[in-house]
Image 1 (cartoon, helix red, strand yellow):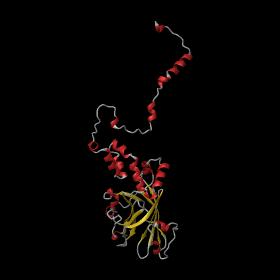
Image 2 (spheres, rainbow, N blue to C red):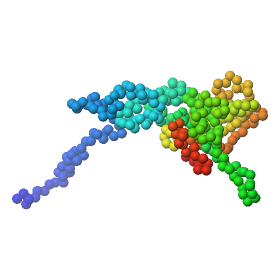
Image 3 (cartoon, rainbow, N blue to C red):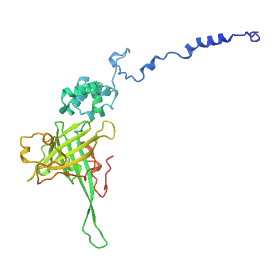
Image 4 (tube, rainbow, N blue to C red):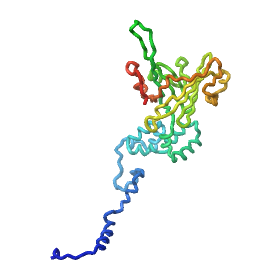
Length: 326
C-alpha cells in the first residue's frame, strides 16, 4: 500500500517547494492603493445598468442641478455645512470650489483679491474650503459678547449686616467685512441688544462705530467716544476657537483709553491710521491721560443671531453669577 512506502525528501526540496508556494499564500491586493484617496461618486447617468435611474428624493426630481447650485450660491458657509449633511449628492455639490471661493473673497476682502489668491495657493494647496476652515477669520453672522461681573459694596443696614451687590454688564462687538465694527457697553442682555446692533442704530442706543484690522489671529480695533473731550478707545484681541474653524472666542489682551485732539479727527475715515505708531502711554490731549484698564477683561463668546433669544448669557445674575467662556 501507498501508506507503507516512505521516500526520503532532501531538505533543499522542502525549501524550494516552500518558496514556490509563497506566491499563493500572499496574493496581490491592488485595492490597498485606494486607501487614503477620496474617490468621487459616479454620476447615475453613467451607470452600466439597463434600468433607468430613479431618484427617490422629490426635490432632486423637480429641481435641476443648475438651480440647486444657484440656491447654494446664496447660502452662507455655515448653512452650506449643514446642507452637506443632508445627503451624499448635496455633500459633493457643496464641495464645489466656487462656493468657498466667493465666501473667502468676501470675508477677507480687505486683504485684496490678489493676496487671497496667493495665500490659497501657497499655504492651503489651492483649496478654498481648507482656507475657510483653517485661516483665522472674524465671524459676521452674530455678536461677540463679553459678560463681566463684579462685587459692589452697599450701605449696611445694621452693624452686623453688610450688603453687597453683584453687578453684571456686557461688552458687545459686531464686525463687518468692510473693516468697520460696532461696539456697545450695556447692562442689557443679548436678546435686547441684538435688535439695535446695526449701522443705522439711533443715537440713544449708544452704539459706537470704529475700525479694526485682522493680522493672523490678532485684532487691532479703535474707536472714538464723542463728547466734550474726545476719548480714543484702543483694543487688542486674539481670535481662537473651541474647535478647528469655529473662531467663536476672543481674548481681550489690552484695552486702552487715551486723549485725542479734535483737529486730528477731521477728514479721517480710518481711525487706525491715526493711532499707527502711537505708544501705549501716549495722549494727544493733556486733560485726558492714557489709562490701561485691567478690569472687565473676560473673553468674548460668539453668539449667532439665531441663538440670541436662547443664549445662556441671557440668564440673570441670581441664576448665573459667573460665566466660564471656555
